[in-house]
Length: 58
Image 1 (tube, rainbow, N blue to C red):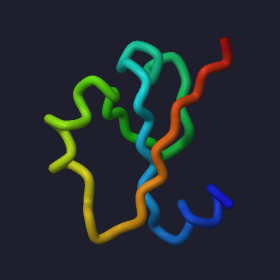
Image 2: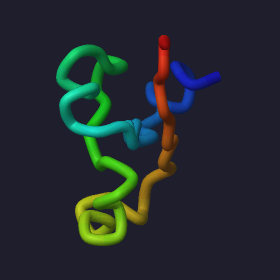
Image 3: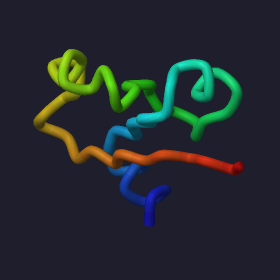
């Protein structure tokens, strides 16, 4: 489902800290750490679907 939505133009937003994003993230994802999301929300295109995720392999 995520691949289908991303293929249709949905934005993938990773909310873990930037250091963890740098280690591993989904292809095409952008980093907007949860603690900074309020400050960075204007960088997200409100006209497109958004998939927010938190990958924690730990």
